[in-house]
Amino acid sequence: MELLIATSNEHKLREIGEVLSGFEIVVKGLGSINGSIPEPVEDGATFQENARIKAREYARATELRCLADDSGLEVDALDGAPGIYSARYAGKGETRQERDEANNRKLLEQLQGVPQSERTARFVCALCLCEPDGTILHETRGEFPGMIIDTPRGSNGFGYDPLLYVPEMGVTSAELEPEAKNEISHRGRALQQLVAWFNSDAPSWKVP
Image 1 (cartoon, one colour):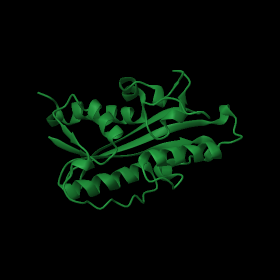
Image 2 (cartoon, one colour; image 1 turned 120 degrees about the horizontal axis):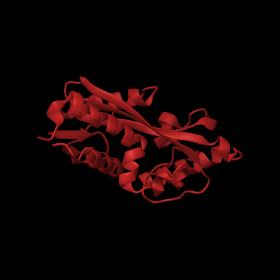
Image 3 (cartoon, helix red, strand yellow; image 1 turned 90 degrees about the vertical axis):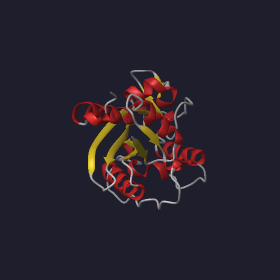
Image 4 (cartoon, helix red, strand yellow; image 1 turned 180 degrees about the vertical axis):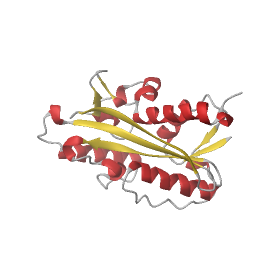
């Protein structure tokens, strides 16, 4: 079964593919679609609403089952910002790396003078699985809490990963090995809920 993942982010596509590797699912990203599909307008007020918008639009446009996610960082000292605007927080950069670096710089600027003890934050991931006709099959949400540090550490992630420190593990999200990250990250936790649903309520997704 083909499953379209509504992303062109290769890091994200690899993470999702690894978690779903136990099923007879061919995971494909937007880069594998022939022709141009207009990017949906993500005008939802929450991560879940935006995931739903993307899943429905891409599923209908491609006539494939589609799994979409909307994810980002919520920082308590910033009243939940950057939140749903995480990917375009700084509004700068032509490439993904440039945008990530600009976003991280702005985040640290916004947190100047905020004590480390008050820098609690969490990554959030909302997933939506949709049929080609727009019917929503299942939705999940995962969170990955930590603290924002001043100096980026690690190279195994993207986005704000190098800045989210996990105190109980003594590492940043970007210092986690992929297998460990898939177990505890926001996306990993949301995907684990999806896998549990596949196994319990959607027997057609099981590997024989």
